[in-house]
Image 1 (cartoon, rainbow, N blue to C red):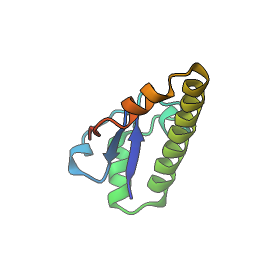
Image 2: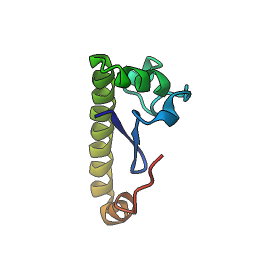
Image 3: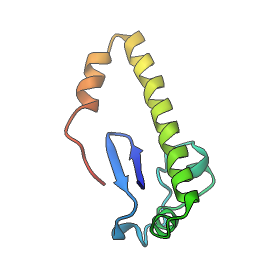
Image 4: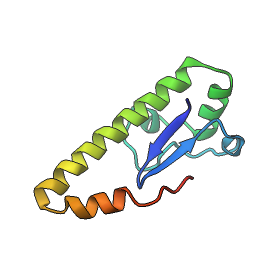
Length: 97
């Protein structure tokens, strides 16, 4: 559906027109294949509007890596005994970018 996730608890709906001229990566801090190869938000927005399957692939690659990093962080927080504070931060009201 053209939605990608970013930390802290934000999501971008790349089909929105405001991403037409946004030449930044999906998430500058992400190490996924899509972000690492320099795919720009504007390119994804265009590909999504054209219903290109590549756009959905890039979004999926990014989102899978996001959830992988989220689970890694949750494990660290549990081991450190700070999971409750992490949950409070994570479930704070969403900020849409």
